[in-house]
Amino acid sequence: MNAATAEERAAINQELKELYNSLPDDEKEDFNRQLQTFLAREMGRLKSGYESVRGGISDN
Image (cartoon, rainbow, N blue to C red; front, side, top):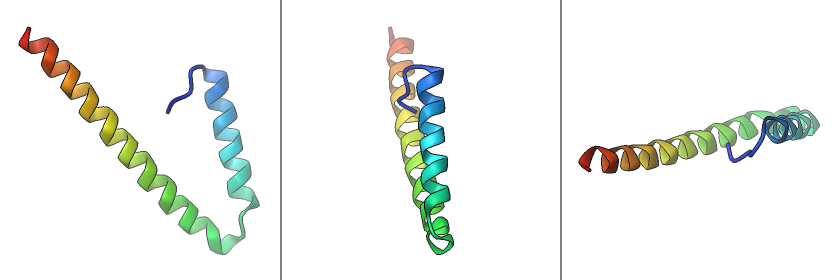
């Protein structure tokens, strides 16, 4: 989410895939759950920030 370039985003995604593949099968479900929680929280934060900025622009 915080990648500055497409290349950086691809590198982060590859690192996550490698980490996931290195986990024992019994830890993969927990990893997925934690990743989904993180992504949902970050998306909510971004949405809130966007709406705040968008509302400020509409008020002017």
